[in-house]
Length: 264
Image (cartoon, rainbow, N blue to C red):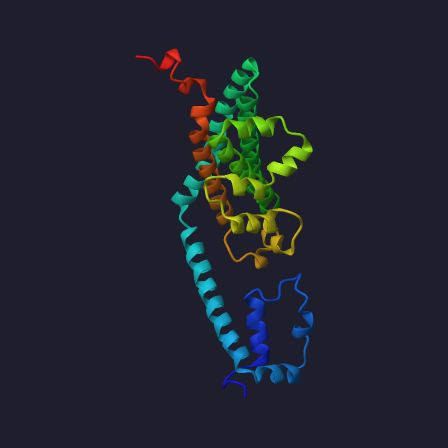
């Protein structure tokens, strides 16, 4: 028999709030089912247990969102996040251009590849900042997703100059074969999380209903403060900076042991 206190309509509402009825879900008939049919299902105690579990998860998620939103109210922290989002691309731009000039003079394919990937990273970061300043969170998310891919690429280039040379000299088919995100994650020594990238694809990749919470005119679809996008951007730019610095011994002539500027 059904567990005491189990209400079919409430169960459906809880399930919907927990994301069980995403817009692309094929379970629409469940939402429209009459009470009699839902009561029949409710006689299975496992359904009630599922409802209780979903209720607990929904409560935990809501508590997490509330705590994060409270933390995002800190004005000093927000100012620092925005500063990181602006300063990292600015510093990368100066270094990327310098390396591009040097390696084009030597016509070093690996060096040109690294400099090119760095400057692509710069413009993605700069573009995301401009869009976020305009409260265009959805298109900004698309640039952050591409920024993550550039982070993968710089990480590979930091491990092996051959990766930079191969990328720079690849045809379209070669890029598809070796440099799609999943291929780069597989080769990278660093443990990039596929789930994180998938989340960014849902928000800023091919049009997906999940991205509607980023539309600037619909606060009712946005549980998290928009400041969370600045936080995400700053974190990814900080990671990109680390990858860039790690790669410098392979590409920056100023770090070569034979460089006169490094001699006593």
